[in-house]
Image 1 (tube, helix red, strand yellow):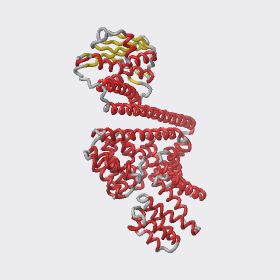
Image 2: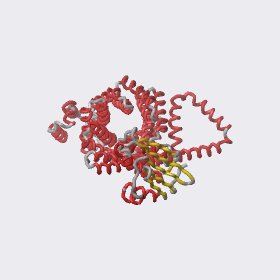
Image 3: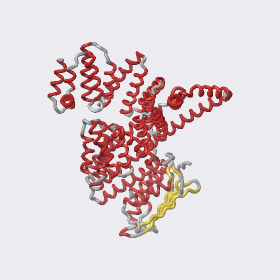
Image 4: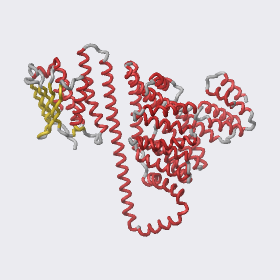
Amino acid sequence: MNFLNILLLVCLLQPSSGLSADVHQDNIWDTYADLRSDSMKINYLLGTAWEKARTRPALSLILLDTLQTIYRNNRIDYKKDVMYYYYGIVHKNLSNYSLSQSYFDQYFQFHKKLGNNRHLAVVNMALANLNSDRSMWSESMSAVTKALELYESLKDTTGIIRASSKLGFLLLQLKRYRDAQVYHNRSYQLSVALSDTTEQSIAYSNLGLVYEKLNLPDSALWYYEHAYMIDTQQQNKWGLVYINGQIGRLLYNLENYSDALPYAKNGYQLALDLEAPNLITQSQLLYGSVLIKNGMRKKGIYLLQHIILDTSLNQALLELAQAHEVLYESFKESGDLDKSLLHLERFHILSDSLLNTEIAEQINGLEFKYDAKNKEMQIALLNSDRELSTARLKASRTRIYTLLTAMIITTGLLVGIVFLYRKTRMQNAVISKALKEKDTLLREIHHRVKNNLQFISSLLNLQARHVEDPRALDVLKEGQNRVKSMALIHQNLYQKENIASIGVKTYFEKLITSIYRSYNIDENQIQFELDIESILLDVDSIVPIGLIVNELVSNALKHAFPEGRSGIVKISLREKDDALYLDVSDNGIGFEESTENIMNKSFGYKLINTFRSQLDADLILDGSDGTSVSLKIRDYMKVA
């Protein structure tokens, strides 16, 4: 009792701690002191630690430390393995991932020696959850696959439901939406067979998330509403926190901010009632964002800043990045540029960290392959389907066996052909998935480049607001337009189905519109005429061509039509006789200087001359009747 008295004294001297609140409210230690036998104390500490594991993990950790002292002082092993497992869960909830891993490993080794497959399945599920919390998708996938195999061997349908659900979640993170849909559907079917409404609700929620990722919001909302009805009937507060958040987030993304508000508010209040730090962070982020969109900026900004500043919360990198993004947009709209820039910088730093993590884990996902014999066929087809068949067709087993025997006899001659066909199909599926995931990585790289270029453009724009020198402003604007012309290329690449090529016509239309807006040109003053052939060019060709057009059009808008003169700027790009012919002309005031002076005097024309050499192009410049620039480009690459 000496250790207990010391611990109690320390707690009473710290009234602000979570432990002192529990000592005062729940009389944990008074109840503990009344227990006589070690087994009773162990059972009480284990039960209370588990009860507080999610809502008061710090208190749960102290209870487990007390339990460990009992084991050490009395040299007993009664339920010691359970303590390992609880330690792993609590440290995971406290984001102490390395410690959590070590305790799960001890629990695993303990039951591996005993050959207890049920406990091995449980700890593999725990490891899957731990690794997914760390965004280690490949390791999590490996653990949940082992758990699913063990649950199948035990014929544990509930375990199969939960492992399949986790597998679907992981596939969703790797953007394999249709594969995720298959596993969540199987979880739903098995939960219906068992009449397990709690698991049905989880399956509805997961399927809603799949359809949301597939950009089918109406279908997503249908599944979310069914999960909401079940959780409301069961008064499942944990489930209601998640489902309120999912519906609120979906409506927020659809810009239906007024309808999103009650769901976001309910989810946040329920999370506070449950005192679950991770749930509080997620629901607080949504509630704060929705408040801002509904005109309640002060309260919304306070909630988001609290996420960033409160180190007691277990904030995930994604939540922090999203909070900075919303605050950046809010301060930008209110005109507070200093705060806006601060949050923009933090958002991009966190976004880069997220992207690096996501790309690394997608590469891990590429390395993870379902083995054709031992995993893909067992997990994806036999395991779940066999369990579902057992639950539904148990009484018909003899008839099925008879039918299978007849089928084997009649199809014996086709076995070899079927085997080769299946083997080829599986190999093609593996190759197809690898190519799709490689395509995803390339898109993410172009997305990242586009984001970085946009960030540079934003910085130039913010800098321009603090510059009064007209000449310096022109230089900044020119630099911003050059950056935008390159950003448009990478934006088109990751948004298109074919990421190896750029449609010149669409790109030029967007580029000219962007330049037009940047100079605030009255459309009734200066008009554009485009004659662009629909051809596809690779990135190395379109970048210099786009920058040349940017320089020529910008030069025309700045110099060709002084004192409010009206006019026309024409851009033409045609392919003929294995060459591209680019013409940019205007009917403005033209110029009287020699072509050589113009090319050497202007920085823009120096850039054009550099790109002309890169493209192996001939250039003709004429300023007698307006300004006309023609290039014959020989070194370019088309994409079929």
